[in-house]
Image (tube, rainbow, N blue to C red):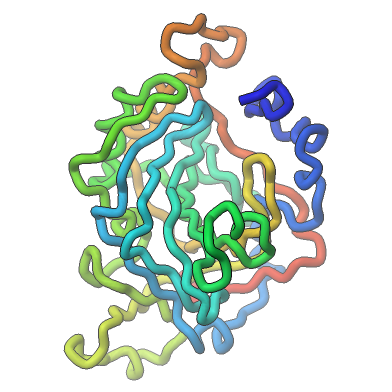
Length: 305
């Protein structure tokens, strides 16, 4: 990374990003604070085309330490996200990564009525209906879609544990390890019901009677206990492109304190280099961008807690 593009969460933190990445000063930046009193219920519009996805576990290919988080890169093969605010456009999963804090009381990028969570998982997708590559989509206003999942400290998360067990192999910046034990991104979502690796649908806005559809007559598994918020925003890391349709699940997933501590042991410097001990002892913590003003953007919701 050239000096021109250097950024981090400490010396060259979020407040300085705008000097090197002008887009960070835009009017459509993320994350934001979800003020529930400002949310516009849009059940009918969002449920007309239910949110649905498909994530084969074999799509997760490698685990990477880019120096500011852990990231799982996928080949996108067989992945699918559509419906809800995305309407008929089809998006493919590019990667998923996580943000966390130095303690269990903070770490999420988005907040809800000012309340932070212990962490936040992001599943990043790109619009294959309109664009040919992820890079091209990342420059377009409707190019990307990110599913956001809040993390709360509780019991050990089985699928997240597969990632935690691999993190010692990417303990330093720029280290990469191949994924041999399948990691199912769908199991990282806060949705009950359905079968792993199959297409699912979140349509909490339907009447209960309408949801009772025999499985052999409908390929989607409908859920009745989930909802989400959605708004137009940006990437939360430089260059902060304003290209993201955000879909934030209201329901969180639980991860253990031990799992979060494993995340906090990642190093932000390459193996063999001297530890920059003045920067939180060189470990990756507080890798979240603080909430930014929503401005005149519309924050919509579908479903309830």
